[in-house]
Length: 103
Image 1: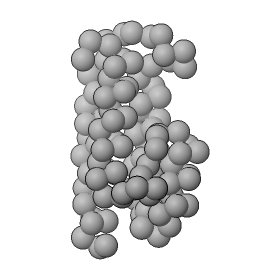
Image 2: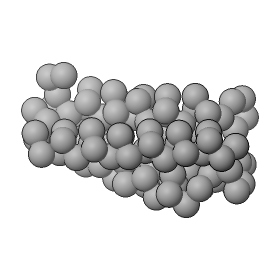
Image 3: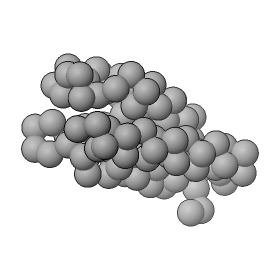
């Protein structure tokens, strides 16, 4: 993608899709803010492993770093950040699959 804001949106959607494929209806993760992750964790209880929650928080911070607060920053994505995002997404996918095996 051409700019950081669009990359942020793309990554957020990928994260939500990974998690929400496992959790349905009112148990779906609504966003990557701290409050959204906390609410989701309270809603699903023990089915949200600490590993998944930790990975969500890392990805939330990475997504926030992709654009400034005004969402008006349109800079090319740093390749190192892109590689880290991909690695964290893979780690989240693995953790969510683990939940599926346990549940």
